[in-house]
Image 1: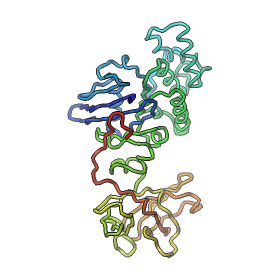
Image 2: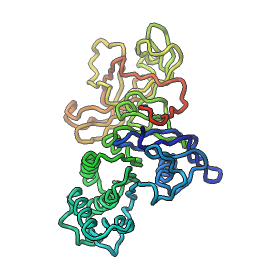
Image 3: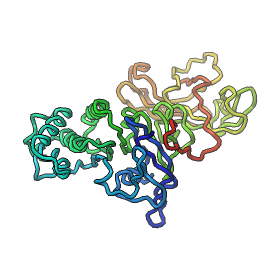
Image 4: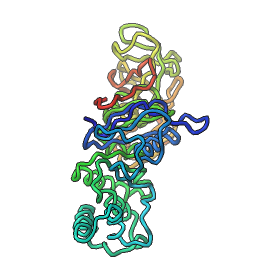
Length: 371
């Protein structure tokens, strides 16, 4: 049985179709992220699970129980909001205790549970602090402790790290994953941050235009995107439209080699018709142009732009004929940031060209399916 089943959920706001027949099953104990651009419907779906919005059609099930029409406090779900929503007039202890007291628990029961939660989030020594005396990361952990104190079946996280600076965000990613694994609670997180979703999640649902475009593990989404939307949204991508020539060879329609002829690709027997190939920047090998005998996927070009990103260089390479490719290369390859105009040779393996499916319709994840 799935922890959460979303069955045919739709939602409109006037003329806007925010969600369009979403089917999704989330497993017990899973860390699941909803990822997509602004306006894709991910926050709307989270609010429907929480009970803050009702679907126009469809239903929401929690551990086999239809909760579609239940009020938020009847759903056995905890939620951490984007701004943490701590009560400013209550100290840390009382913030964490709030949900327990609303449920009419008192005395030693409350003290023991709050102490347990504060120990879990490593804030026991700050029980008497007020929210304004806490850092952003500490406030987030208090919000998580408050959500977990009531022992919910599901924890919902709405952009939980968006208010933190880059260094603290990385630290809190590790902390959040540790907490989720220690407690073993089913967790659903909304985020627009790809790195955050890829690093934290067991599985991810990519939303676009109110529909689930693909559901899968981070590795599946990155290496086997279901369509162009997913391929472009998850990570960086070079997209090359190509026409087959036979025997696994293709002519690129928008890129050309130095002699002006279409860039020749070898992709093996991946497709028999005009195809859109995805080529990740880090799969491209880069070396100085040296006139060596080219392989089946080799092209020469010049550096148009280069930026330093620590261990990597991010390069835009203008091909000698026409077109451009994005490349992520080890910084040590050059020893310095190369200047525009430097000649380079690019090469990649046939398996690095990923043929995107002809059918770009979204792949829904049926309730309870592994997707």
